[in-house]
Amino acid sequence: MRRRFRNHKVTKHDSSQSAMEYLITYSWAILLIAIVIAMMFELNLFNFTEKALPGQCMVYRINGPYSLLGINLEGICKNLEPEFLMDFGSSYSYGGVKRSGNGKGQGDITYPSYVGVAPIPELGTGNGFTITAWVDWYGASAGNCQGLFGSNPSPGDGFALWGYGNNNGECGPLWVNGSYDHWPDTSNAFVQDRLTFVAAVYNQSTGVGTVYENGEVFTTATKYATAFNSLTPLTIGGIIEPSGVVYAFNGIVSNVQLYNATLSPETLNSMYAEGIGGDPIDLENLVGWWPLNGNANDYSGNLNNGQSFNAFSSRS
Figure (cartoon, rainbow, N blue to C red):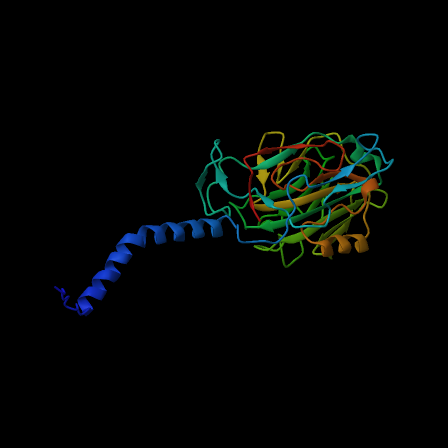
């Protein structure tokens, strides 16, 4: 006996019910995928631009620190942007957890950030010095001066490159032996919220100190003493007084290079053109190279490694 089956007509209600069952079944999977993708974007995992890993490029000296025999760059040295940037501008607890602020120094800087470096006597063996760095200044903080690099200038024989001179015009951009350049009439700081190439050149024989911003002369002065003290500890991202007060820089500092020579404007322009990942350009006169790419190590081959206090690294 042939059995007959009645055809079931699919109704609108049946289609809606199937769609709802599908959504209920797979909604958690869709949500999980969306969360994973969002996290990957947050971690910058979709940025496939080649970047320099920590320690990927360094100066090699056959006979050890400060030797010039066979000096050359080793590793992958292609002026690549750093994988990490060191931020000195946010407020952190001792455990390294952000307490306040939005990552741009908008909280109480209870524990100032800086990198400490032991004295470098070799810095005083040349006819002056050149400091270069890439910085991103977040803005003023409680009206205090903000230091970028140098030794304590308070005794009168140190030197310092400042990143902000407060509204009173104090802490001129380059300070040597108690004398300093005045900020230009139109500014008391470098460019804000933008990666900027800054350089300070001090000629010991002429007493001329010049500060550059993105390859252009920012300010200059001729009033320094003919010698400076190179036997005091150095700091990056802040200047420390003998009392312990830290004039911390509010922002990012990257690729700090220190030379015991006066580099020419043409050389500084070449360094600016190389970008934030530029490798050292004058190896013979290079004293220290701190890329600040995930650590505070010195990659000049001279072992002037720094120690980071409260600064943190984030992916560029």
